Amino acid sequence: EAGVAQSPRYKIIEKRQSVAFWCNPISGHATLYWYQQILGQGPKLLIQFQNNGVVDDSQLPKDRFSAERLKGVDSTLKIQPAKLEDSAVYLCASSSDFSRANYGYTFGSGTRLTVV
Amino acid sequence: AQKITQTQPGMFVQEKEAVTLDCTYDTSDPSYGLFWYKQPSSGEMIFLIYQGSYDQQNATEGRYSLNFQKARKSANLVISASQLGDSAMYFCAMRETTSGTYKYIFGTGTRLKVLA
Picture 1 (cartoon, rainbow over the protein chains, first blue to last red):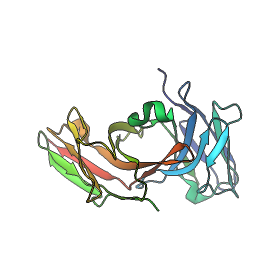
Picture 2: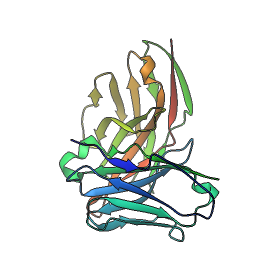
Picture 3: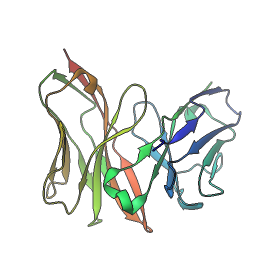
Picture 4: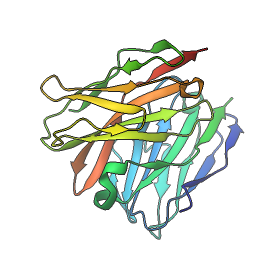
């Protein structure tokens, strides 16, 4: 099966600019996650979708971050305006929940964002 | 509140020897899952092994085994016969069930360096 696709792979922007990341999960995976991984740290959950509904966005900085999964398939994460501390790798993951619970997530390759 | 703790920021091991990476967790959820992921320098997160909270036996996957001590709330990863390709970051993660879906929390990671 095809993996989780993410684009772009790298992005460099100036602070106060906006940026968007795209993720296409594995076909049939109902749950999609966006994680932020700052250098030297573990991934931190930003938002979790179940189909096209939001399950958890408690750690999403809603004043500048937004995400959508309109048709319950692919998803976009946006930052506007970006700050220096947003420099991180943004990882997308998907899972089919209970049917393959013991196999964990499948992660995409991530988007490395540098804010200068 | 959930918590995953990895107390070893970095570890060295000689090639062909075994190494144990520590992970402790804290949860009030009686049903949970514990995972280990490998993150090489390329950045992708690779699922290694899973242990369910009700599993009676320790999980094993090839050279990876999980030393699960439920009473002590620890889930240490054991890598046998280390190889140079095992050099990477390793993350412990815990899954809880929330609103009918899974939510994962990651530890801060351990950087493993295998020496020739």
